[in-house]
Length: 280
Image 1 (cartoon, one colour):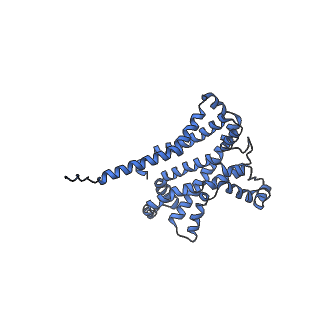
Image 2 (image 1 turned 135 degrees about the vertical axis):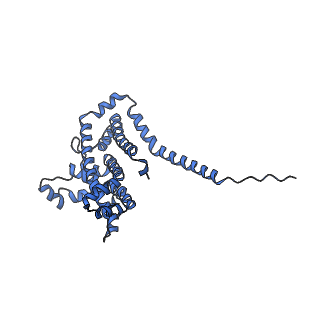
Image 3 (image 1 turned 90 degrees about the vertical axis):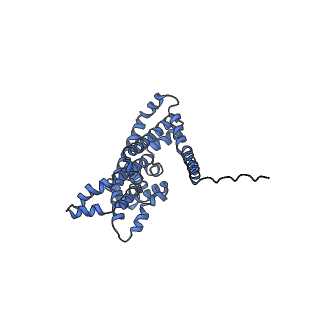
């Protein structure tokens, strides 16, 4: 009786190709269910009744004011965290000092703490009847239920984003070019402007974009410290909640779509402008 012909084992190349296809399918499917489908549904619901109702919802006085407040908070947050992020990244990467690990851990603290807890903590520090908040109020600066507290809360929750984008690039480029500039007589400011900043510019830009997106979409901490005052301290995220609870679905979807569109367009533009050789 003839024996069955032996089956040849699959080649390593075929196995790797199959594994790659499976992983690609799983990753794309996961992203589609988690990101693409919800965002697409928001866009579809937004324009289900045509463009007219959307435009009307986005041009009301409360909506325009909410976008203005959100823009101010986001701009202040981006400026503050850009300056702090670059400085902290340089300090962590370029210097050795006591407490370096503690500083590293504290920078990541906003990623571990709930934004609602952050808002409550800020009220306990900067509330009108607290020592620090009372002193500031006595000098004409109101923090809680006002714009400064909203900026402070948003700065806190987005604190690590610039640092964690810039620090790995600083580690990768090393200090050779900076030391060469110092040898040629350049000062620290001139070295940073002409050597360090060009080397980290795309990491910095990406960190700024992530900070902007985080600031635009922040809800928890801002909801606690703002007081949700319509026409005064209401951001777009708070406006979306109010419209949805008042059964104004068109207004809620329109504001949500506008926020998502701003964040997505900004992220896409920075990725298109970034040179391919700098991509990780």
